[in-house]
Length: 312
Ligand code: NAD
Ligand code: SER
Image (tube, rainbow, N blue to C red):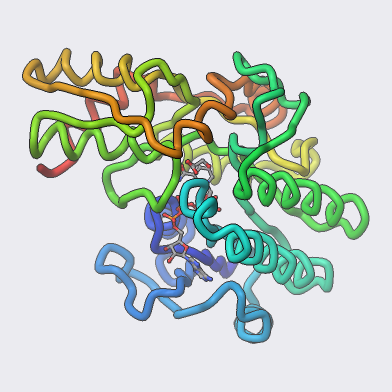
């Protein structure tokens, strides 16, 4: 049995990733780890360990003693939260990564997944259908940490043969777990407010286009990337990945088509500047060519599933 450890497992991605990995590899094979004292109910079908990604000694001891072969390292501060606490964000987003990369370099871990983000791009990047290889001058602490992380992943692969794989996730939209402090979180909140109040005040302006993806696509992409033969993985920094792309006004129009009483207004805050520095849409042709990636959810399909599943 291949033992898999997911660090940062109680967040928006981790919750669904752990469930999907357990379905594929068995409940006991996938250990959920997070800072939280208690494992959330939804993850109680398998093992849980309280773990601080910054506690290098504990992480090393646990992985070596339990013969963990694969690690998904998700613990991080996201874009909006990171801007409020840059020193800690840099520390959390980088130190945990080095701990895991070093364990793989020493031969204790066979495969690593570490997520990057569209935040690696910046205002000088071509904004439409942003290419895989392009200008990358991020202006947020989150984007700087993700760009540095990508460079280190590629370095550990090239120098030490570490099998590390990564995706530049777009903004992720889900209903099983809530998002944790990102600039794209409005695209989840909007569904909860649509169902509970019939109206939503958006913290981004109406014409701010951003790359987004429904969580089912993101989880499938992650596992497909990790299960692909190593020789197919040509990019060891992080792959561009596209799902759908929309503005708040376009998303509101899709919601209104299914829920005609829905209203939206706009009150942009500090997150507008972050969103303005990111792409409108992404070219993910390298992921398609190298490991066969294809998104299944467009905006309309995602909106339908969200409205059907979000509880008011
Ligand atoms: P999240 O904030 O929802 O969850 C993060 C989890 O990590 C939380 O459960 C938190 O308790 C845990 N955590 C925080 N500090 C920890 C520590 N020191 N040790 C152990 N656990 C710790 O984040 P998410 O949206 O699930 O994102 C996961 C990863 O994916 C992050 O690296 C993020 O940058 C990346 N990502 C997310 C998105 C998105 O839209 N959600 C997009 C791009 C990239
Ligand atoms: N969804 C993430 C954020 O907004 C992008 O990495 O921070």
